Image 1 (cartoon, helix red, strand yellow):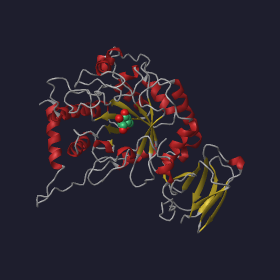
Image 2 (cartoon, rainbow, N blue to C red):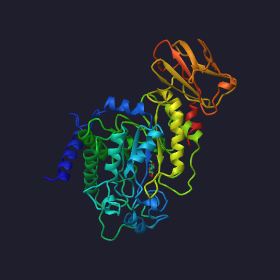
Image 3 (spheres, rainbow, N blue to C red):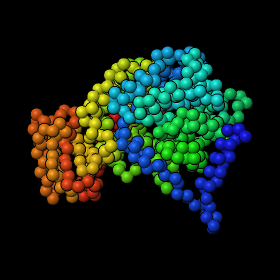
Image 4 (cartoon, helix red, strand yellow):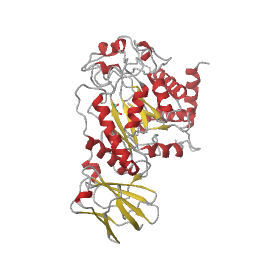
Length: 463
Ligand code: FHN
């Protein structure tokens, strides 16, 4: 029996079991198999990863997927692979750039909306193996990550505007019609997808995260999302899977409509810092420039903006997945490499206030955010509201307080709240980090949350 058919039988079986019916015939919702707690904690502790959007479209400098049939005619877009030869691609170099940036994991677009595959897949010839380059990018990057103890993760687009069986003509461009006689078949497409995912998880794994995207179009259904999530759990039980595997994502906000119904181990706010959420994991995916794929002379975010985005994400309780778009020759643009190196330099001095922390105990505000780990609270003041910073009361007692570089700071704690002041000479223009040591482990309290609406959501709804 072929791999494809065996996979199809597993999926069918999972599909049936995941839609159990109670004796009274009413559809009941199985409690779905949550993520492995150890893997989730490890990934959350990492706090900072590199997103990589790459395909032959980097030859054109236009947006991956979305420019197909728009800035780049379909026929031209789909033929770019014939000239794609990233001779300067060096997986070890990419990994060292991520490490120098202080990033602990990498997510590569193994297949984006344009359907092009960056690995040696047996399911289609529309892959890196049909290019002049003929090398398995996924294999080389996964191996380099493993060597350097960086978690390797795969982005995979459910929608596929290239595959004839994917049942939509969107993004073939205005007025695009499926070729005459083409009869899309989603069942056949889903088998194709499962076979590809089987390759990615079993030949290049264990993966840290399978990062799904492109779930929003009509052909993909909740039932398919449930069956896919359950199937992947059988392939790699400790695999983390984001909430875009199913249909529960609330748009670019990235939250999940109903966690008892919709699958996904973490929420995925996009191009924004997520709102303060500490009870369910989340990760903001944000571009270092404007475009996801490489674009010549694209606007690149300043160092302060990148650091504030990272700090606010951690302070909100989430991870940051910061995206770079490599060029057609296989290099990450030198100016982006320099920006990443600068972020890494900041993390070398301040990383203990980010890595393995969780958001709070104070809710984010225009002034900044707080993170905590054990008995230590890190107050990140990004914008002083005046001479002093007043924070809500904490039931834990502050037994020591200093700046992260060890210098003096004045902290007054009363049952009404905590007041912090720092001499001008001690303030950091990017992020003044005050370390509060508590008499016992930090616990989030309702009381320590100011009633004001969560400014983070507004102040940082777009970066
Ligand atoms: O359409 C994609 C887009 O190209 C990019 O991949 C982002 C990042 O995850 N996701 C989709 C837009 O929501």
